[in-house]
Image (cartoon, rainbow, N blue to C red; front, side):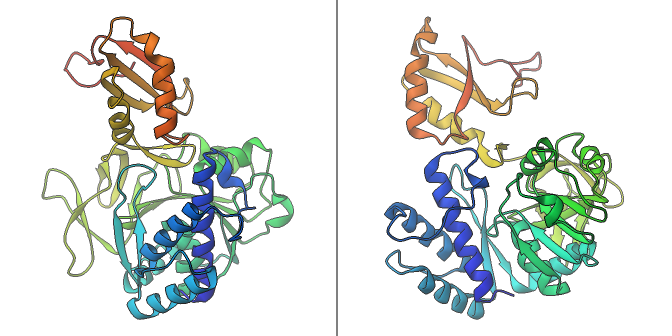
Length: 377
């Protein structure tokens, strides 16, 4: 499944991701100019990339080796182990590595990939070290022998001339927002796929208005792999056929068919018999900011370490407020707002641009509703 070509893709995408993190630029992931150049890439970036590539393929790599050596060692490791390790959200906190064997990936590819087996080309825009970037660039083509075309997620590409009937264009919500804002349209016969994050309300309709013949949303997680598929945002996701479902506990559980154990969904879900689900909210308090997973708890922990902060809450803004984070702070001082410039400076040194709250509210106690639960502000 992973030959040298596929391994080289992963190495390039991981290096690009580490360069983007260094730039601390919300829109840097649209830039395809990041390339391997040992004379210009900072040593810490190369070190982190070596660690990430090594974790992905389960091998120890040296930051002193060049890219060709990494590819060679990673390819040999995969040929020996027939497995990879996907990482959970590593933008904050400590990421978890999740084992995906080749047998698991082949079963999943046959199931989820069956929705796209008639495609003439699979065009993937998601980085290939992530679940759905891998699915469209590696898993599905391996099983169904479909031509694959990885492209950078640039909304301003000449899509009208790039796309043709029979294409499946696999993107993510933030890309689709900019794709539509740029006035792009689809030629007849193109399928638009959205994954990696919850689909904004109305996106299905707007993609169809732009000419997409079919819109498909995929739901899954690094911990589990692909979980469900739907063709309309009003409908529940239909759980993929390689999952067994149990309703015996207080929450629905799933397990891959075979000897594996039962696990909960990565989100709180509403179950719709016989095999449908509506994801409600993340159970691990992770939200997406400009396409990047951010742990609210991790941001709160950093904010609490400032000497002026007694307690705090961080959450995503409501749609009418914006698309960034906001913070509520209980201060040790009565004139708490005088500390805001110093708090902002402190957070800039300890958080990435995606993690930085853009709005601050101060109060004597955390906002609670009449039931004593966290309330919005």
